[in-house]
Length: 184
Image 1 (spheres, one colour):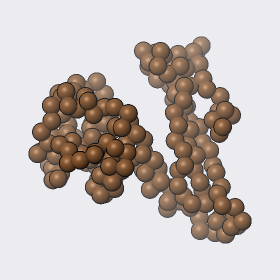
Image 2 (cartoon, one colour):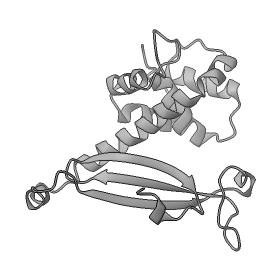
Image 3 (cartoon, rainbow, N blue to C red):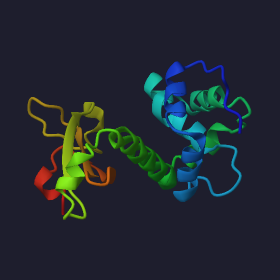
């Protein structure tokens, strides 16, 4: 696979180059997003679904295909074929890529002296929950608290095994879900 060096949307280049192509394609295969030689690989899908859509949130499928061609000039895929790839395997692939990004970003933050203090524990979990408001139009999908706040919201729950520097869980819930229920 050749990745274009002339990328029109510079943000796509950042997300594509954050990971090595080998990591992206390995995760794409592990999640079943790529099962055989495919026209649409993990790198193109990741670039389209992250910074591609960030730069143009209401992009049509035709525009998304064009974003893929900006990443890989040799990509030949129809809008219909791209639409078929936006499925549970694609979602799982994107979740694993987010997990990998978080893992890569936290690996340099672990203080080497801390695990020595915690040597008697096999794991030390840190749990974080972050809430964001969403546009009202999404309230049927993502329920928010309403009132003065948006009627649509979501929470991101991240569980880090601090001792090993790996995220063990990433979960997304409605904005009204109580945090204390998450660890169960």
